[in-house]
Length: 269
Image (cartoon, rainbow, N blue to C red; front, side):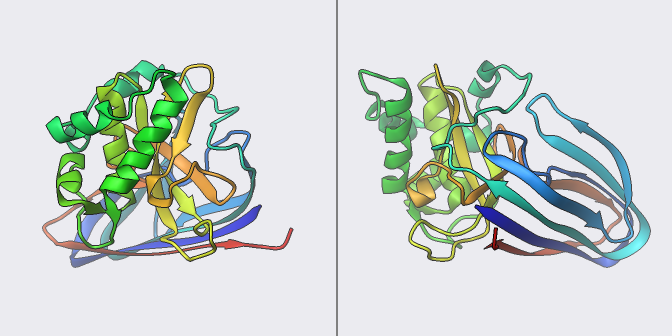
């Protein structure tokens, strides 16, 4: 599938910031399921800094914006060709061993309820079947409902409330998989549309679980599927904050506000 992305993030400061420094994971991952055709990331008034590919295989680009600055726009535009690999991250080069993703973070700490739910998903064959059951259990236990959770909601809190968004689904899968001793990580990216063609939030997140013999396999409880050609993978981390496409800091006493617009479209081959 040939997909185009138009993604704009605007930051506004009620008092001009003295300077802003950001770190971006906004370039699609290199693996067999994605072929980049053209891609550009720009920052209004920004100066591109150092860039590198980290141990997880993600491209990280630094930016700085000298002040005083009242508004910044981060614009991502590009096209890429995607292939359905049934969720398997084939051909992705990275140096970090899977065992590093057994470490829990505050949002992905398993409480007793998550541990009990995880125990119900264990199968005799283990591995891939257990991972599929984890994803299905999260989809059943946490109803997709935007606006019911916030950026700092933990997996335990979203399970207790029974509602959440893709971030909460991913955190819950991570918490349960790690509790069972299965390496798991958070993935940020884009989604074209749901399987039946219904429009979905274009900025999306899902989980990857390490399965012996297959490697990293993606699971998206929000859509009850594994990532296919509709998904664009950007980067990964231990949780949503670690895998955030944009991270940064503004120097100054002002309050920052942000709005995001994302459009992912299928275009003619």
